[in-house]
Length: 401
Image (cartoon, rainbow, N blue to C red; front, side, top):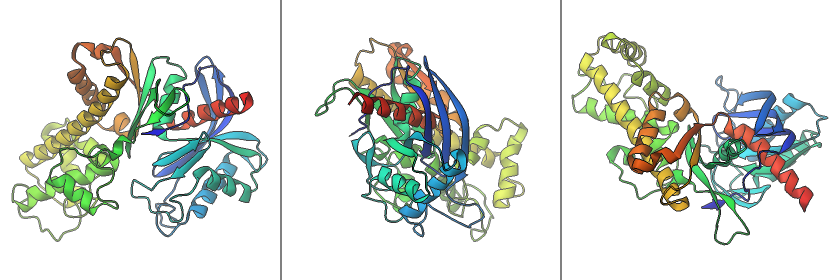
């Protein structure tokens, strides 16, 4: 449980703020105008990969240092607003940190297979500040640092007074909530529960194998069961086991490259394709198999098995996420006497075929006759907009002090 040092927005915060969203495979920089009355507009934005598909750079690897990574971020900021800009900046940094103030967050350690050196134990906002100074961007002041769950909740709460839980279901997974009575805090605050790191879960042999082969075995156990970064590889391990047992793809040479014998040859996008295939004879899955595995004439039974495995893993992921949200609701309002909005962002929730309705169905199953008190609210770009809202709140707090 990590306090964010942020309460809830009033919806009347206003002004122009710079937002940096750094949480996965790309970094997004946006100039955002808060209009008050819960209204937000994006003036301009820029999105850049942290790992060049062509191989010319990779700021997520151990070949890169923290200084190099944040100088790259500063360069993207300069490209959006220019060297003479004067604007407060909010940073969404979606990795485990220890928060000490609105603008002070120390990286505990990387997740999502990031390996950038000389960053663990460092103050993220100082790294960004120093990079901005080095790039000559002295008019840009980093005033707030949050994670993507907090950003998602702030974005929803800016226009919805019932929003009190934020959850990310994308490359990674995490949840936060607004705690009105936090222990050892001076007042109500948003708490980041780092649910992706929950353990003590009922795992199976495939979960164990994936965990053992991951960058950090034993860590982010729930995230490895529910997030887009890992679901494809988890399904590949299931299919590989069935292939080794002779249940699928008999006659395919196990030395051949591609699915299911090659690590990471299946991703969440492929799973979504399988789940959404409504064609006669599952022609979409068959075409993907032909291109990715060289299997020319798969049996309809094999195609159906792939779709079923993808469905089961997606359903399990949705139910596990729903369980964490239900646990938070039990903390906040055990009898669900009041309405609650759960703000959800992330590619898994927004793009994975069937994930969103399964999450809703799982919550309904858990909450029974009180399920109507809980609304799931898709919150697109919560990370980016939330960083701008956090910056506005930080500036207001600084003015009051």
